[in-house]
Image (tube, rainbow, N blue to C red; front, side, top):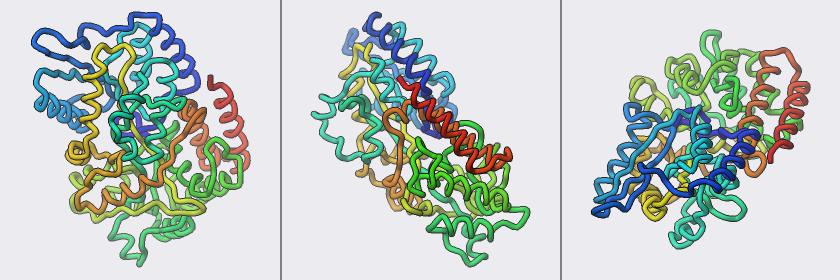
Length: 425
């Protein structure tokens, strides 16, 4: 759930939904056309499309992977030029809203999956239902990911790539301790304790302030049968209590309260953590940067449920484009299984559909299996998910680092969550 191309967590708060609605009204009353950069169909059948994204500039791994994909499309389609514009994740919402208000949107927008409903409600992106029905490939997508493309019974986007969280483990350290990867959360706590020695911790995850730091706790809450919108419950007490206990016992460093997912990866890569909860983003990075490290990946432990957190980006067509047919052709091509099979390893992401050949990579196969257990917020929770997740991280911060009891931390967070959900328009 990072703040660059890595994570897909909701970037929209309840306030953003209100601003989106206003922007959508302005766009509806505005031009309804595209600017010179995005207009196509010129002399010689030339078409220029604009695509906005937050993956990174072309000199970064994430940006280079996307640019390579777009270059490949241009090579296979004479007369089509795709002009990609990178907008930093933190500025993406504001820029898109300002452009919507002026009717100056891109032809294609690569958006956070959890923002799709808000964008649809605001009139920023098109209803693609007829195109999707004619396309006939919606059944190929995992149900949870496909649900993020829906608003009021219609389809407004197509999943682009997905990500999920699993357990990375140091094979050498677990083998020396005579342990296999944990399959239950009770084992996770037990093994993390055994693998800690005062200098090394058994488990690492991101607990940094903000929505990113809520991911691991949400995963534990879901495994206990809980609901992120209703955390002041028995399941919430189990999840937060276990994480607080592990930090207090030294099985997990209290540094997790300041670590983002990149920091967690570094702790694991340097041998300072025997296990970590992280996404598929770091598969190639670990292999390339730490070739001597003996590591593997396992499914997350189960409890009442087996669950992980979905991170996903979707592809949408703006309401102001004059090139909807050409934009749709690009999106459909980007989702061809053979195209994804080549692109996904470079992008360090997972397929959002179940018919993409993962090759003979057993690690990616684990993530593909984990993805089938993915959870994503829906409805009001999706609209307010960034704020809700931030409040969940706040409960971890209070209980593990701020001296509050688990019960008080949950009660305080629940009040803030209820307020955030009540403010969704």
